[in-house]
Amino acid sequence: MTSAPSPTTGETAVDSLEAALNEELEVREAVAFVVVGTRFDPTIRYCEFALEESATVDGTADRPRITGGGHGPHIAERNRETVALAFDGDAWVAKFSTSASSHPTDALAMKLADSSETGTVLAPRHIPHDSALYLEEAGFELASSAVVSRTRATKTERELDRIASAQATATAGVRRAGTALSSTMIDDGTLVLEGEPLTPARLRTLVDEEIVSAGGLPGANTIVNPDPEHNPSTLEEQAGSSSTADPLRADEPIVVQTAPCGPGGYHGGLTRTFVVDGDGGRERRAHVGVTQSFRSAAAMLTADSESVTAVEADLEAEVRAFGFEEPDAVQTRVSGVGLEPVEPPLEGGDRIESGSVVRLESAARVDDGSWLRIADVLVKPDGEQRAAYLEGPSRSLEPAAMVER
Image 1 (cartoon, helix red, strand yellow):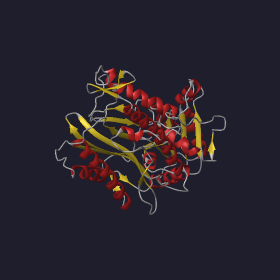
Image 2 (cartoon, rainbow, N blue to C red):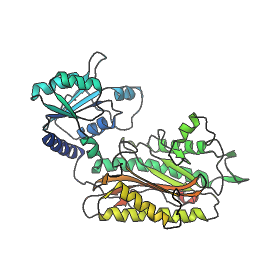
Image 3 (cartoon, rainbow, N blue to C red):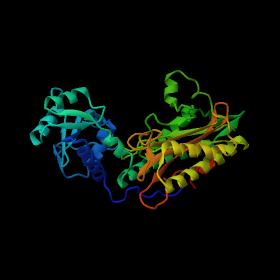
Image 4 (cartoon, helix red, strand yellow):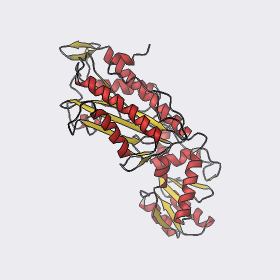
């Protein structure tokens, strides 16, 4: 895999966001765009990341923004704080909750009413009900808009750097898994690491520890041997499943999937499949088909913008060409990646335009309940540059290929 080029070289996040907002305000004949929520809300986080580059923000001088993957009591408290942001076509206004008796939207609505004529205010569909009431009481009419979600579907150079940083922590975690698996002994088919049977739960812990050491936050996004519906193994444990306690075995595919949050607040997305002491056969054929599908998708997205459905179909066709003809023998999934592990472009008809950063996954069933699964992050840049995958670990089935020399 090559180092992917920047999708939108020279354009800042605030340039991209303000251009999209101005167009939306003009088309919808609205006076402002408003978003309200905590910093756990990805729309708030996206706007605040963009505002780091803006010099025209009223109301933030006394309240530094909290971004990235910080932790600790003061960071957690600040992240729960309610934030109200507005853009009126010229400048931003930011208000923050300062006490239980005040609401930032009340102050924001009064500020907007003082500086502009009342009219339509655009907001995401998920704006809190009490915030909507404050805006209506100030004389504004509310209308929903997905303009920020659409803007987030393409990435700036700075966003790509943050995703690449997250992908580096994912790579570190997956390499730790390969290193551990390459060090195992085999006892009657069971994998043993340092004298103890190696379980999916133990392997996941090793991956997460390495991600943290590399500066990432794994959350609950690391999965060993996910089921076809991608349920995290942590949820299986809470439900009392024994699947994460049964030792891993030789000559069986072991899938490691992770989507950590990097130090810049953005996610990566990576999946690899390992086989310890395999004897070839169906998983080798599946591996050839799956890896070929990634080359085909990169060529497809270099040539033109495509829908999510079209790229998923191309991935599937490449895998099926290697003999996986049963209707349920192949799975593919394409989605955006960024402030959330899964975000637009996501729906079947969504277009993967220039500037998109997407996670592509191909999987083939090699046995009952056993899958070979690989996922990588691809960048579709502007201009004539080739779509390319972010740097990641080897796609080899051999765990030893992960051992850094």
